Length: 249
Image 1 (cartoon, helix red, strand yellow):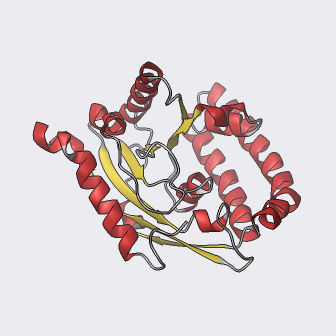
Image 2: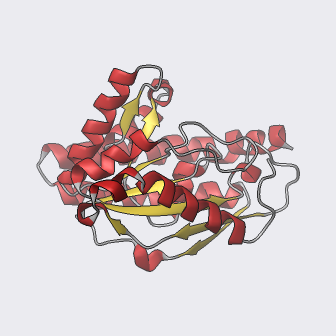
Image 3: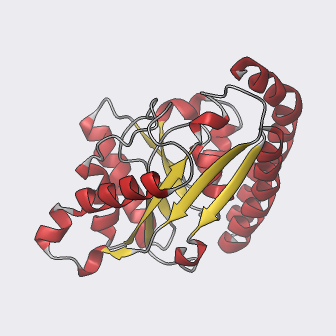
């Protein structure tokens, strides 16, 4: 079934992805060169909204989102902290209304079109094999948050192949705490079943819970040290409460 879904993607999604992706890259960069930063962001988000709708349609994904009211106004210093199961996690984050830059593994930047989209969305490449390069990425993401551009990170460091939440690395939270950002835990469930672990062509219900923000600027030193544990517990609890079995790949 996975092969069949990939075939569907190539036939129906890939051409639209290339056309709309290139359009978003070109228009977004033109507006940015003209110093029309907000117009660039709005244009890119509008085009990619259409693309994400198309992706979800052809992959048979039914997206259910709780907590949209917890998404702050654009320009707020915010960092989304999400669990990571699938290649579909990034489009699901955007489809749920959380437009932001993503801390993405450097390998994605080798793929044509995706490279351009990551740049126009102000994503940050991270090389997890190098502590020094990882810290550079965290600092860059933190600086973007300080400027009012939202960011998101997957603190587990890699995709969970079982659906179980893995340990969230404390270092990943420095991007948020260094900027004094609002930390928003995000739980995503069943994203892996929509692609990597697909076992049928039936619609897949993907659930997203956007939780209440934690103001990192108001935390004590001890609370900051334990922030990763607090967020990990909240995400784990949400995954157990969202519909469907928890912990199956």
